[in-house]
Length: 246
Image (cartoon, rainbow, N blue to C red):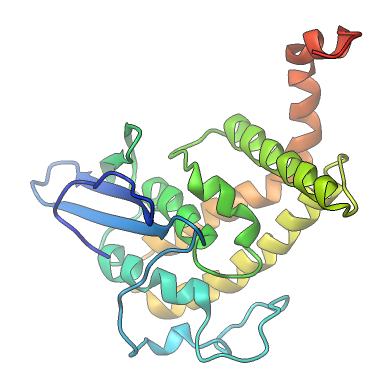
């Protein structure tokens, strides 16, 4: 969904996030607004019933896709507006990206592909795809241009919070992060298949390179989690040495 306005405050019904791209040396700006339903954490799409052929569920369908029937891939449908907005732009073009949420404004001098990568991660998580639904809590508390360390912190914290809720339900829990690594391996498969969709949909490489960057994060996460957790262990010394309940 494109917009030339500013991001509206969140309401009880929706969460509004706006990405604004100001290309270096150009006056024209490209703005893209994401509206997410507050309860379902699913992006609101308004593209009508006529979808491009590359959004069909069977078109380069992910090998691990749990959906057996349906006219369209949820993630592809959610990406139509993004493709229409940014396909004409070069991926390595320098740009200033301003992300506006109800809580803050984030500005980054970066490349087009990195800006789109941050936005694409948000769109994939909120698309309704069953394999990216695990990242909906991270979409709710979206952090644009997060570093690898910040992403690991957010992903592991989100995963452990989920285990807490599973424990409350009496369901099996995992505090070894093996399940989180497995989720990222599933996402790697999704990214690979989705890149094939984008190659059919796009004339330029900005969108394709963006998902390649997104996939690099997914590939590195299972290995980075263990190393990074060892590095930040000392931050938790007060918890580890405390002998009585707080």
